[in-house]
Length: 162
Image (cartoon, rainbow, N blue to C red; front, side, top):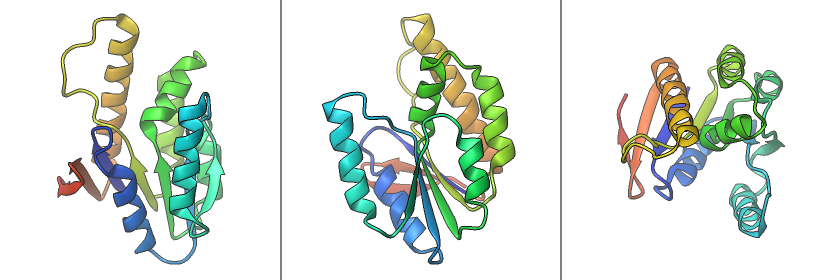
């Protein structure tokens, strides 16, 4: 399992795709984003174009545990991304601890997981954002401990952390 983290537009997605193409021929991609507006619709379209037909795509904003059961037999499964997934969980007012536990139990070890590092700036002003940053930080830490490799993306350059 590989975790790829970093800031926005740091090259996480491209790096994860490159790593995924190096693994076997049966490749899955789990997309967590939902097209809420024109900008997100355009982002999703561009990501699909990048993947072409090289990955079987599963679109699932919430129940990653169910999709991960389906991708256990794949050579690699890119999960993009935990940052959006957690936002979806909080938006729907689901319990992030329960959902995180379900996600962790469902991991197969064949994943390349993309997430953002959001805890490197100032402390957020509002309680909801602080909760999000805290929850994502805890989730990222759990996944990083389980991962065989961890990369931190800096300006398009992968820095191997683990």
